[in-house]
Length: 323
Image (cartoon, rainbow, N blue to C red; front, side, top):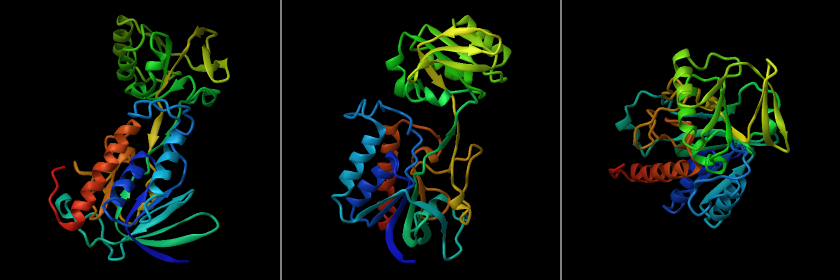
C-alpha cells in the first residue's frame, strides 16, 4: 500500500467534480479526482441545457472533460475507483462552525482503490461531488424506456416532448407540483400514481380542473418498442396511449465513507453547506447533487464545482471570498 499527498481530493467525477478539478488545477493545486464511474445519468442518451454542448451524450461530456484535464500534470483522475473511508488523523469532527471551516491546515486521510489494489492518500481539503443514486418507481419494464422516452428532468428533456401525450409516473408527495411543471410543455398530461397515495383528493381535483388526467391504479406494463413509449397498461385493464413522459425517482446519497467524520446532513440525506460549499467539518466541501438542494442540471452542477473550487483556493491562502 502506498501513500500520496494532494492539495485537494475530489470524490466524484461528474460535472461538479471535473469542473472543480479544472479550476483547482489551474490554481496550481495538486488534485486527485476519484470516480467510481457509476453516473446517475448513465441511461440518458443525450444531455440538454449545457451551453455549447446541447444534445451531447453525457458519457461524451465526461470524456471531453477528462481529455482536457489530462493536459494538466498536477491533476490526476482515477476512474472505477472508490473511496472506502475518509478520516482526520487528529480526530477532527463537525465541532467547528461554518466560519471556522476555512482551515488551510486541515488534513484528511483516505483509503481508495479497486478490488485488486488500494492506496492511502492524504489531502489538505476534500470536495465531495458524488452525486446521487436513484430508485425508479416499481413499474415493470420501466428501465427499458428510461433515458429514451421517459425522463426525470423536465428542464433537461421536456422540449423534445413538447405538445405530445405525456405521462408522469411517481409515488412521491411532490407529484402534484411536478405535474403542474410538466403541464407547461403539453396540454395532454396523465399522472400515474401506480397505486400509491402520492396525490391527495384536493390535489387530484385541482389537477383535473387544470386539464391533467389522474390514474391511480397500479401499472402492469409499459407498451412500446425499442424504448419508445406507446401506452401505459393498468391493473384494471385500461390502456392509455402516450408518446413519452417523465418519472419521479427517489434519490439517495452514498456518503458512508464519511462515517468517521460525521458532517451535518439534512433530512433528505444531503450534505449541509453554507453558501460557499463549506460543510461544518473544517476543510470538507461539497458541490453538485450531493449537497443541498439536491438534483440539478449538468450545467448547474458544473457551475457549483467551479464556484467551490474558487472558495477552496481562497480558504487555502486565507483570503476572504465574496461567495
